[in-house]
Length: 205
Length: 69
Image (cartoon, rainbow over all chains, first blue to last red):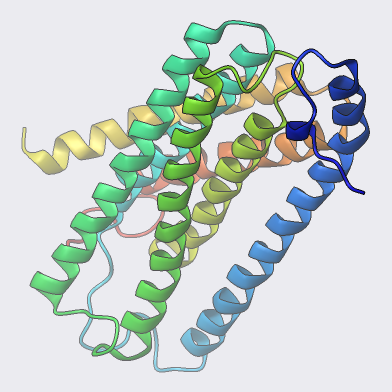
């Protein structure tokens, strides 16, 4: 019968042994999940690039280019959250729990700030350029699909990090047993890296 | 100073900070072993790249800085 770490009472030496035995397995599983997510993004990104290069120039006639200045600012907010998340995990590893909590809160706030910025950008596009998901051809459909999917990942990440912070506060993790925090950091970096790609293809090149 | 200028300067300063900090973190973690740390190194490298791209976008070298939607 399979047994999980949570089923073993606290203080039982089997916890450490089982954690050590299953940690790599869980890490590989999480990395596989990220690879599958990468495949999902890649398929839509390649579809977008194909459509973009088979059309009549980009952006299509009738559309001006996106606001790069605001996107650069919003990108820095998200990339900054990647740095704060890295500091959070490092502080946890070194036993600085207060600093960990502060960096986690900073990460969550920056993630929420990015989402707010994206919401503002969507509103501006809709109000001023009349760009929408279904009424603006390939341009609107690809932009809103890809950035919306990424935005959903950021939203899920903000929830995920909030849960991790609450779990850490309630003593679920220790300095040497914190796979959940490692997975959260990996996920958040993944979301950042996907945005590097989306920012490049939609705003820069 | 209007909002666009503030946004512009914050993007430049933020991009420099993110890039420098990501590179320092990458340097500090360079010799750490283990699969997860290898993934972290790749991610930090790409994060630094993102900071560089944001910087060039903010100073107007990449994209079309100032072109309002």
